[in-house]
Length: 201
Image 1 (cartoon, rainbow, N blue to C red):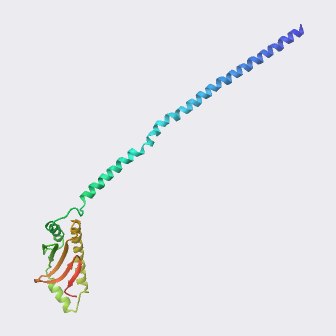
Image 2 (cartoon, one colour):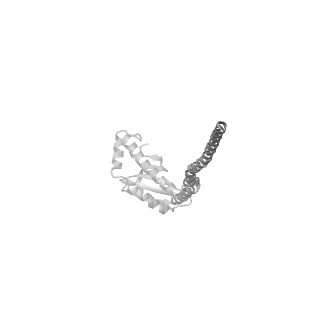
């Protein structure tokens, strides 16, 4: 009887061990889906962020539009700037030169012939000043006379730029400083800003 009782106890222990082991295996199996579901849940945020990153793959359509605009702007700017295709008449250039002269000299006249525009200017008292320089032994290197020639040369440069901008690089520009007491007497002559005659030279 004691042996049977011991056998029953051992058998019961074995059954309990089997039950416990089977329950533990079930928990492991159940844990795996939970881990899979957690990994799936962890993966879903990454998948959800992909649509927000998608626009980064479309830089080309955004960049091409400004390039087209810049090209069109460049064409508009080039069309608005004076070019060799736009050739102003001598009368048109004379009107533009007159604007430059009005800002600097009160006394002048403009004439044009063939491909040359001529401007004559004179200033009150210039003949007396030059006579005083000559009496004192001055020459073309006189400081006051040099300053006046530099100013007239700068104005001549501006007028030459106006002519070139009008598409008339074939036009020459002649500038003469006249004696205010005798307009038939020339004191200084320039051709395209280059001095070709100086009364004190």
